[in-house]
Length: 514
Image (cartoon, rainbow, N blue to C red; front, side, top):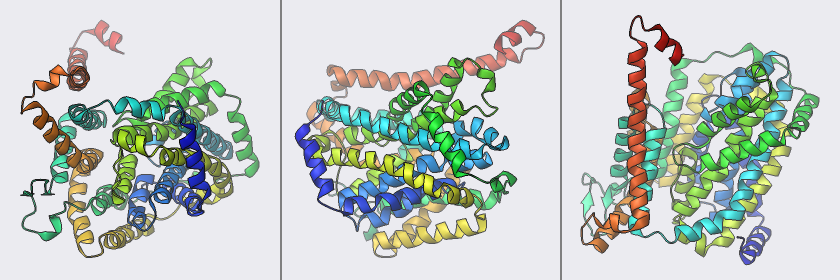
């Protein structure tokens, strides 16, 4: 269902101000470059520009952030194809066939495939968002405080469970994030966790904290690894080969449609997103292929499937953020922080009351996708050289920008101090394999979780059995239990399988498990 009046209003908003457009190309360039430098991911770039958002109006600021997101979706494919180093986990599937194409002397063709697939995937996901956002918001508006509380808790639990590694660590990270999000003075005037510091009365400053949590682990990891440059990066990238790859994508509409569908649906699930979508799309495309043995050896269909899925997940993640106010991962968490800078809260009420702004965001992303086609084609050869930037230049530059940005955001030393406090926390979490995204989402949703819980207890008179009397709450509670139960069952089966495989002399069982 489309609100035509809101759609006309959105076009009027975008047409009446040049400011809404001037940030698209800089955002795309920044995302492309950040994604092309291994270690400097698009999430880090989005975190670094957060302090600038407070000096922009709301709509231009959101457009700038989403442009970085869009540009980074393709930028991550550049090192994946040229160096076999994915710019982020969203481009892991791209390495499977992208890098073999480079080794076969087809780097330009592979980059063209990735660029065209990213553009079409992005357009497809935002087209779906345009048609269904109002229906989704209308359904979500029927949720009360108890349902919103359970949705927030379920979103946090999915991020903890599906982020990989130990589930207990993920849950603990989410709880720590929620506790950090409740620091400061609550609605009753009670101070919590302030340690008698006036700077914490309003809570922890989320922007400097997020800049430290996302940027510090990546930069410290880069400094420790001292990555080696790959000789393949010196391969020339010709425009003719890039154009050939871009045209070739149109010969595989089924793969494009399937990748966009996987990306949009999976991207809407908190904690999953493009990191899983690109692998699912790649695996399904390989399973359906007539000559699946060519995959992993430079098959262009593998690049198309992966890139169409990881780019289309952007629209799915934004749908969850707008309708539920819950970020699905690091990038959408930063987008939620950009909302909060302007005192805007994502959720069904925001969508219902500001449908023209929502459509304006969607229309601007249509423009971003088309602009990415042009900008990507013009700068792709330069971006291919960016992957060779030395680590000794990247690391200090990012740390300097982080410190300056945190000071600019806070206006005093509380910003850099907050950043410095969170740097060792971020390093420890990466070192001991705790999901940073869970802490960030918990930090952003802490106030919402607490507020909805308080309202639920007020309505129910403190009786948690009230949740079972509301059908939607009962379904969400069941889903929450099944999420943890399914994860525990999977771990038990894997453990049992590994024990059985380890029994000596049981040859037939080993063969079956293989």
